[in-house]
Image 1 (cartoon, rainbow, N blue to C red):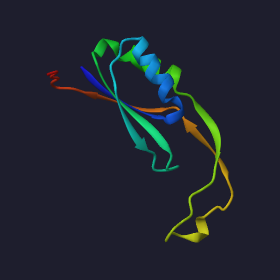
Image 2 (image 1 turned 135 degrees about the vertical axis):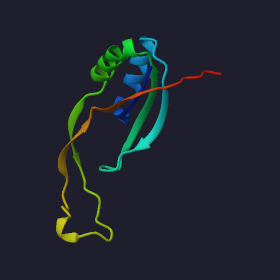
Image 3 (image 1 turned 180 degrees about the vertical axis):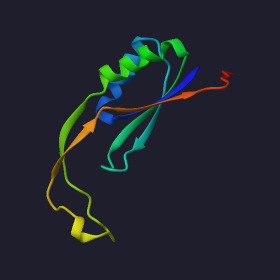
Length: 109
């Protein structure tokens, strides 16, 4: 058994949740915040049998897409003002960060 932790952008969250439900994967959703852009993310915790991991990864890949977005940088409160860029920059957002961890035991009460 594996624990899959998938951190996805909020824009992809509902689409991924629907894809998981449609394919009979049970997941716990947690609200989270990214450190770089300080924007909303959703973290999915999914327990899955080893043989279903590739199918799960395909669902995540199909529902979480990276895209370019213009963002205004955060002011360097107390930081180095020399590195602060006062105008919006284009960055890649979205997609998914996925961790697959081995599970020694699983209990459902």
